[in-house]
Length: 110
Image (cartoon, rainbow, N blue to C red; front, side):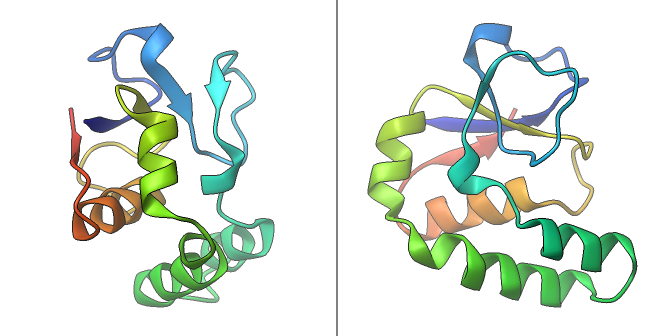
């Protein structure tokens, strides 16, 4: 199983955390760049040029559609995918979790 959480949560063991955030200045642990959102996508969203629906569509098109969910699951099984947004807030880790679950691989928020 893969889990998701956010950097400042203390609900996970640090050695299990994997950053999927493009920018994580203070994070010194493992990263998984294949799941980073593009710089353009982040910029468009932060500058309110696109909404959540368009972000999700573009993230899928630019990132997830190019990956094999089985390979991602095998690489990250037992890990906790991390980004900045708190539980319940819109973010790409929830898109990743949905994508994995839709493809038959368990992923849930801690």
